[in-house]
Length: 89
Image (cartoon, rainbow, N blue to C red; front, side, top):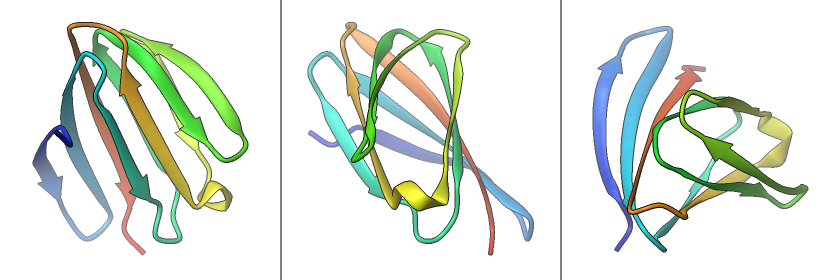
């Protein structure tokens, strides 16, 4: 399972997406030359890049720089919802 994705906003300046994960599910995404701000709105888990990993909990935001090239998220709770905000290049 790769998580349930939903596009919330797509405009000329940025995109806002939501992904819902269940326990044990990991998603991975390439950054495609831009950064992404990831906010956990429910649950908890771990965000990772090649440079390392960081735990994330409800109401925490992590900025993943474009230099990371890709990121992944794993849910360690029954459900984890993330909001992803990224600029449009």
